[in-house]
Amino acid sequence: MKQEVIETEELSYSPCRYGASRMLFRGPRRRLDRPYIAFIGGTETYGKFISKPFPAQVEKIMRQTCVNLGCVNGGIDAFVNDPTIMEICQGADMTVVQIMGANLLSNRFYSVHPRRNDRFLRASTVLQAIYQDVDFSDFSFIRHMLGALHAKSPDRFETVVKELREAWTARMTNMLRQTGRRTILLWFSEDDLNDEHWSDRSNQLQADPLFVTRAMLEDLRPLVQDIVVVNPSSEALSQGTCGMIYPESQESAASEMMGVDCHTEACAALIPSLRENLYKPV
Image (cartoon, rainbow, N blue to C red):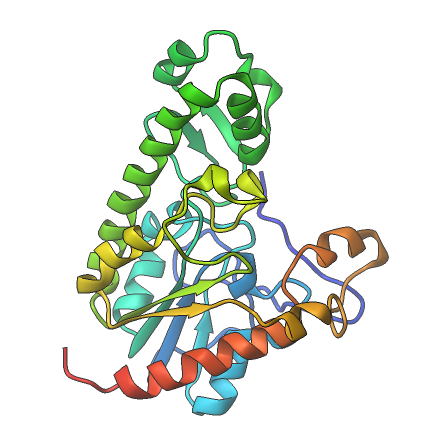
């Protein structure tokens, strides 16, 4: 499967590659032989349908090269298993890591596509044993599968959630030890960061990042410089798709994403942390 390349008549993402990585990143390609800040994360970091996503806005304000390594529908696996990305982060003055869902990674129960981490590949024999009454050949996407498993048995599903959270914590720890302590974690979501049980949320399995709690992030604090939490304001969210650039066929998808003003607020929240921590000894 080839990684998706998103282009419209009005917005070009100038896809580019770095080193030996098989991933296509948002360009134009940035030079790595001068000081830079690296950004890794999912669709928001990439800036799908956004002319100037928050990494580009940070670059303009900080007047320092920002390398956008975001991946549409990406999870931790898209980055931690890519030596080129980890090397770029190690060479950065600072790395900003957008928090991605615990559902978007391979674990003891199922495997995801190595780059499109929202794609379901296969269920393990362990998960098949737990859910003998489920035909896993019916699924192509992770959220679809998880929704079906929860509907089949909420009690058994708690075992799945526990495994995903443990796998997420282990994978994040692995990644942060590679990127180094000059890292800022970014929670950029309409959903609050808290320790509320996932099933108590009004949107349950539609929350993003899925299954990640405040306690899980606090466990990672010793490995990073800072944790920045961005919940876009009601004013920013009310703008909807205003200013976004997308083909008519993608209007529904665009309406589900955080818009231009949300990215501006993410940038505004990151700038103070970057200025405080960029040259602080670690």
